[in-house]
Amino acid sequence: MTDRYAVIGNPIGHTKSPLIHGQFAQQTEQDLRYIAIEGPREPEGAFAEAVRSFIAEGGKGLNVTAPFKLQAFAMADESSDRARMAGAVNALKFVDGRILAENFDGIGLLRDIAVNLSRPLVGRRVLLLGAGGAARGALLPFVEAGPKELVIANRSVAKAQALAEQVNGKGSVVRACSYPGLAGEGAFDLVVNATSASLTGALPPVPATVFDAEGLAYELAYGKGLTPFLRLARDAGVRQLADGVGMLVEQAAEAFEWWRGVRPPTRGVIEQLTVPLQ
Ligand code: ATR
Image 1: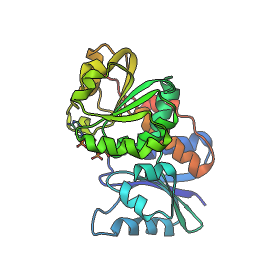
Image 2: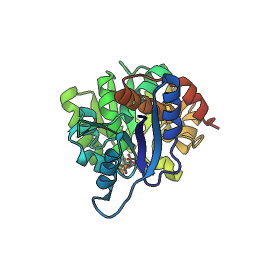
Image 3: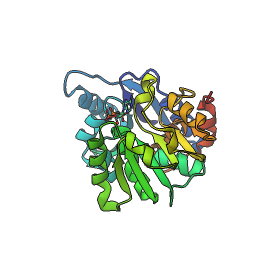
Image 4: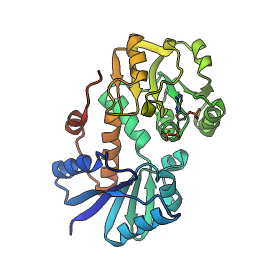
């Protein structure tokens, strides 16, 4: 029987996941069907019920997107370290009546940066903007990639500090900083915008001095062209700019491999979904 998978979110109309996983399945000759489900926001417990009926109908796994990442975490029987650190999950797997939870957003981001964009983090100075869900997801994979320094900047510095403290046991390369404080930090090899500012066309108040012309500026949002953050980086002379399309496809590939035990090729799908940065 054809195995069933889906992405669940609300709204879900914009999702690229069925296209991505459909291509992965074709390329790896896996017999599966992948659809989009609009999950219920209300009443309380309705999301968990929707997941349970998907399982009852033979569902093998789900990708989870906004606003359900925390609820998915709460209903899991088993969570990976990455999911626990992020406090959120973006993928579920159903095995022998148990719900297993993962968060591949951070590792997808890291793979895109280190492999696709040829920028391994080891020994580098990294600046992470934001301390919300997206930044939390990225933090553990980033620390494990061995940067020389990892600075988290956030409007609410206390949130950035709390994040830094959470990973301090893994080494003391991580510290928090305010946006004004970044003026004294010099240039970074990699600047990642993990704030939600670009969703509203806003710009995190980051000084242009954080950019290195030879470095990489990475915007987590995708398909929005040159966001205010990427424009600032370009105007500061940064030659390598990227948005989150590669991260989107790489996190999907991680989930696909987790579910199916086969790693799909990603380059062709990334090229197909790329919107020029102009
Ligand atoms: P997500 O899941 O997308 O990370 P979130 O958990 O709500 O969303 O976190 C949003 C992040 O974007 C936060 O770090 C927020 O900063 P504060 O914690 O100081 O509020 C950041 N953010 C949102 N809009 C911003 C803006 N215009 N400038 C700078 N940071 C912004």
